[in-house]
Length: 268
Image 1 (tube, helix red, strand yellow):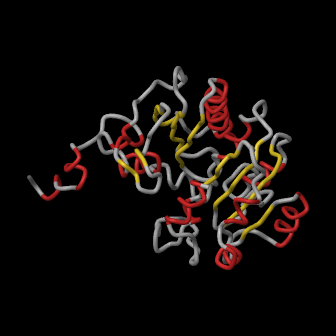
Image 2 (cartoon, rainbow, N blue to C red; image 1 turned 180 degrees about the vertical axis):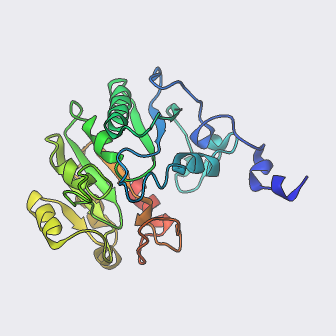
Image 3 (tube, one colour; image 1 turned 45 degrees about the vertical axis):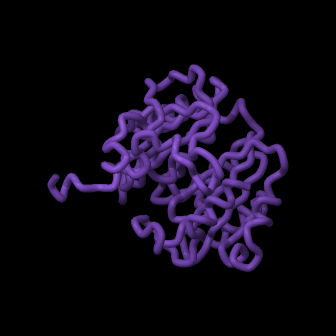
């Protein structure tokens, strides 16, 4: 076997034939019997200056955690099989192109289909403009609480004339009547936010937990800020993690989460 063919995935049977965690593939729109539906999106509304800079993200995520049978492996963070209980399927990547309005419509329509089928949508990005159309699909499925894990607060009204881009997703979410509360965790350093953006977020009622607070107080206050029984939309920007864990992001900010902290929040 050549060096190019030597990789850890071979130990578990080579390439998986399914989707994320080797779950079964389904045609987009087929929710029958599914509890969780995974789909990838390269972008929704990229800025002209950077384009769809992480369009390969969904494929990279699947490749990293797609060994055959992986869903049945024991997971010590969950204290059981990785996909124990329930039935998850993967729709593959949504058709995304140069028509930005159509991109948003495509994402909104597919997320809405999942919700109407009684399943939980999981979107793999792609950039942080994707939550805007995804959240818009919850109009008839609210109220919801947003838990955002991100190095940046994403409250810009516009950037380069674009109001639907990655720096504006939480401001656009705040304008949706079905978004009842927003909890934002992990902000640190200097990002694109201006003072007025932070003030607007506070006026709206955001619960902010910057990393300096998380380091001081731990994660329990974050959990306590989410009303019991809420329907929670989790928005995880990978730059919430420290660059020593995930260096390949467009806006690295030292002092972020380690992987274990993200697992702790999700488990709680």
